[in-house]
Image 1 (cartoon, helix red, strand yellow):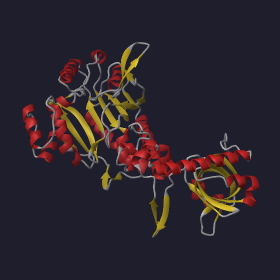
Image 2: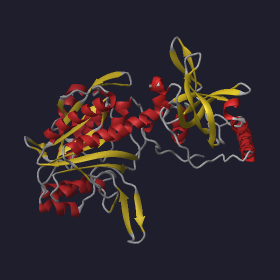
Image 3: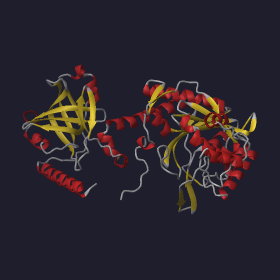
Image 4: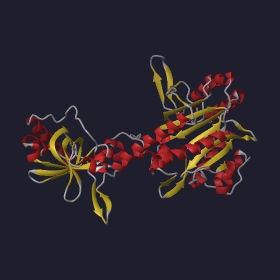
Length: 501
């Protein structure tokens, strides 16, 4: 903000503080304790005939204000909608009107009065009682609108994206569409929870602070527990604890939780994110593919009313069944190369030919993963299951029953990005130990995201885990898809940001 703008802001705030003192001199409390409401703005707008000439009581923030001497029109906004109020001195009395004259856009008021329509046909509350509930001391960046050829045109909007993310509370006040996104986010999570509950799966909670992090390839956030004098890690996944519960005898468990990965920030990554993980005993990845396509389709219908969604200009059809495309067939389709069975050196050469950057310590799996991310993933617009990954990429997945070089794993891709990850879970403790040891070797070679060896998890597997299907799904990315949001920051209330200077 420039010094000139800052000076203007300071002057406005001084004026509002002066009004605050004048309100107090009228023996009016500018920060009240409560207010009884009888209805919400949207209810009145939806059913005018029901409320016509009836007295209502509601509260909201003043979003527009037009004074005319002894009367004024204003719009107030509650959680549901904006509605017009008409305030006349003769109706509310000298004291209340004197207080109202000291109000500003952004103040929160409570009003009582009859519902009517103005000569222009706008539903309005003729106020008979007005109470200031909260005095606003900092001006809002008011969004202005006008009608052109029957369409709403928004101008002078609160559009600075960094400011919107930092001051989400302001973003929610002035941008109604943003509020709707987060209402829809809540509905998406509720619909997912209902879907899983209806199948009889148990929602559980597992540790956020873990002595050994695992279940994914990522760097953790590290902390220290003073009383025990030990290092702890914020979880990067819920997987290893949830599979311990399957060992313990539960046959279907899920968790909707916050996970944390010490990684970069971009359109699809935030260090703190929401994950749903599900584990079902006696099932495999084929079962889980059917569940995923059915669940997402039903959530879309529940939340949006349709299996089809428009995402960033593309119409995406979530109707089941979704295509199943083995990973190496996807390489052939989108790079023209047959990469199955190739040595590490051959894969390095292929990456170089495809202009994909690599690191010297990468193993074959990491090279394949990078080629896939750059050359295959952007083409997967319609829902697709990419399945049957190389063993090197999947240290927690069961080997493929028809090809020991592969594992039974799939990832659902929609709109050019992965939204989940699922396996036929590895339950052979000997094979699992070997895979962990290979990860340790990668870590020693310089791969900071390689997984840790978890002796307690191996001990749990030695007691015996039944055949199990597992799924992890990124809630934030699913919300992005179903709300047509281009960035993960648009669907997280308070995304991670650099500190303000």
